[in-house]
Image (cartoon, rainbow, N blue to C red; front, top):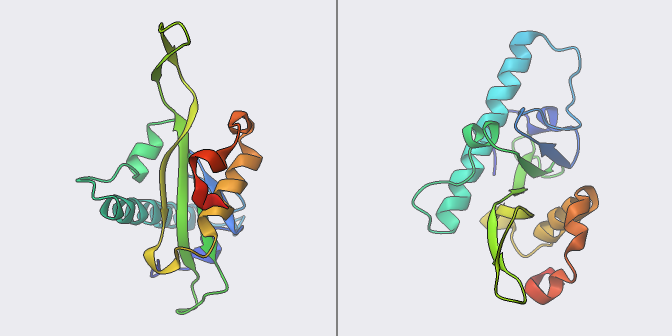
Length: 165
């Protein structure tokens, strides 16, 4: 997905991590003025909102479940994948995102008793339609597994997600 601003300046790394503070990891441009930082935060919010809308459309959801305002009010982490090589407009493109967060769930144990748990869950996931089936989703998921130690408890993701092979 293309944007009218330089996503390479906004995201210093191929995969950037964004939390409720809306400050991407690896951001380039240290020493920017407050005005430039505010502009960059508005650009980041636009990326999150537009990618959230695209995800909702792809899933046939009535409203987006990922937005900048929701990110600011929840303990969610967004992994955003960019491609600085595909500079059609000279500004880089956003390939997709993976959102994780803690979700309160009620599960049954072996005895049939209800238990409340709050595991780290994949909450939303989107790869731009023109870039699907190129391994970008797998790249995002594997990156998240490296930086989210609580997800290592997932025994064998291939049993649940065969397309990760």
